[in-house]
Amino acid sequence: MIPLAPLAVETVKSAIELSGDSDFLFPTRLGRGGPIDRHTLTVAMVRFAKSLKGPAAKTWHAEPPTPHDLRRTCNSRLAKMGIQKEIRDRALNHITSLRDPESKHYNLYEFQIEKRQALDNWAAEIKALIQPAPVVPIHVKGRR
Image (cartoon, rainbow, N blue to C red; front, top):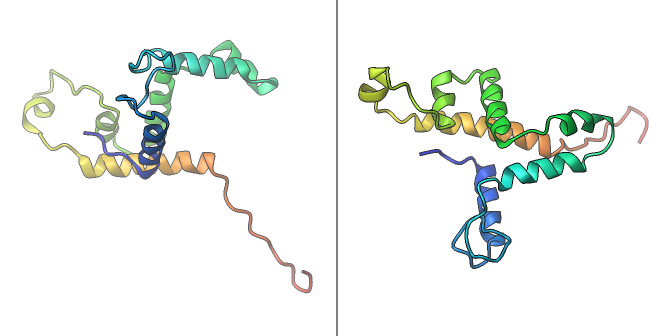
């Protein structure tokens, strides 16, 4: 079980609205009534990379990011925030080691509270990137 941060819940609710009467949260646009293809996000990211212009786009054109890069970025940023590897692995649904009996058989705690905190922290990072901080006017004494 992966807890969803409020930003993720907003995204899912928007997807539900956009999916109309489909049985799928992310339906295909091809009119077959099924789910999106497993490569849809990869294709969308490649198209986005190709659409970028200017000098900053050069690296995106040379090496377009993939959906796996999003997972890597999340893992790296959570590590930078001080989130323990065990919590990061569980939040990203990484498989626990089959050779580690403690992880496989004895520790059945699901870390819901810790995963929620980690993913809430990650959502705050994303929100800060996509929603610029409000501009606050500064008044100089004697001037308006």
